[in-house]
Length: 435
Image (cartoon, rainbow, N blue to C red; front, side, top):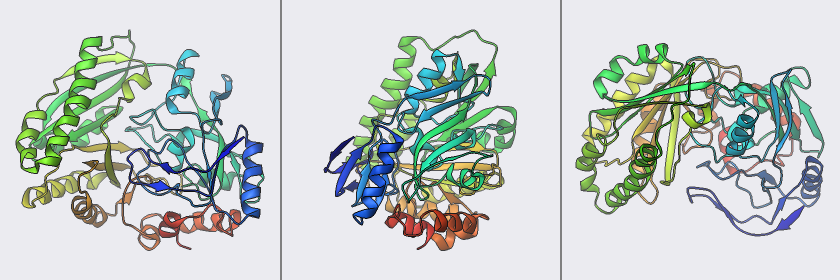
């Protein structure tokens, strides 16, 4: 196990911490020993992933646990339909390994840089009519608790811990391994198509019901959206040509988009006219490939993000209110608003807990002031009973969150039992969970 003391910053650069010490354990046993030592020295403990959270959920001035040595697939059980993977494994590596064995997760988010533990702890999700977030696909967890013990949990073993720790915010312990349900690899056909704002909002319920995975992006200051429908296919593979993929995913969506965002940051008045042009730049296309190559895409333009989970039936009204707010304000928004869905699940602090959900995600280019936009958007989202994404910027506290999560007190009671001294606490958890 290596030990250092140096600053750490997240992907967006808005969170910087200087822990007293940093460790990169090779095993659950080494991690447990580091936790016991930190507790004896009076240090708080937090684990980080690759830093794709925009909040200070993993911030600490005590012991910071790095994930880079706690990686790799431990076991693939074809009979049970599961894979067990070390918690620091990046989703990209997990997806590549599963594909090499002819297997796949059922659903996933749109980036692969996150570690598996970071992704599940903050409630990372994709979009799906029937298939839910990454955390909902978990079948078992290994967790180092505040007393330094290694706890295995599943529906049959420590089920109350398993129920909550799937989206645990790092408040219940440090995850060292995750067991996911997997299935034989399948083909997905993606259909990407521009669509007017009025049409996509009028047909939203139908589009979400008719497609296994539906999402769309609305470009502020325009009436234009880009839609994406992913559905299972008998194949064969028909991926985008290398040139088409480079033009759409690298040149337009990253290189050119970054340049336009930088222009907008320098000259905000250019954003509305540029948005009208750039929102028409992406053309319709259809392609078929293995799941992770369809679900995910490169994200090289850095930004800050706020996302709210709303009752599915409130999504269109909230989006229309957001559009009206932007139109009557002096705000200039260069990033599209992303809309996705998820079915209800049974995880206490999942943003889809107990209700069919729609997600509205607002972004601002890094270095551009986001406060006025996010504050105004948050007022709209909370008026609809929205739940903020745990890893994205928001201002909500435990008082508000207790009112939108029916099992909030159940989670806090479990935290009191597992970590009464708040070894895994920090300022963010104090705000969102209370003392």
